[in-house]
Length: 148
Image 1 (tube, rainbow, N blue to C red):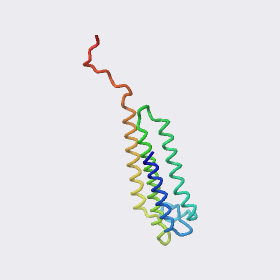
Image 2: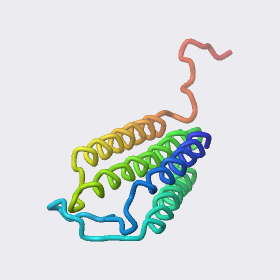
Image 3: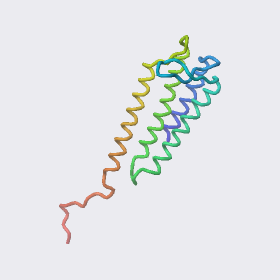
Image 4: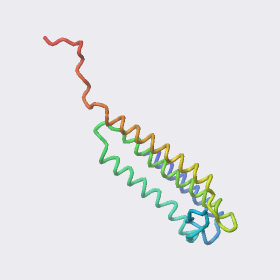
């Protein structure tokens, strides 16, 4: 849980700092061509960028707690939740960079780096969960022990 709290604090501070760099009308959605096709207010963007990652992370932790095998890896889902929050922090920086262009246009290299980091986090989480679920819950009996 410490990872999630740390990521949430970092995301909140980062977002509040980055929002000051945005115009009053923020280009917040971009089409495949890279051109802005959706906007929101600066204040609305700040609220969304802080609350949505928290809600998504809470959902990930909730599902992880209900579906992990006994003795599984709850920290894997917590790490994924923290990585998700940090992914949205990076998206905020992408939005700032994109809104500094005239006209606003998505900064694809920054976006692709953030997506790659999130995909690595997901892969590590899935790998850790599959490893935990494939391990037997009861260790096999020692074949060298003799019964009397």
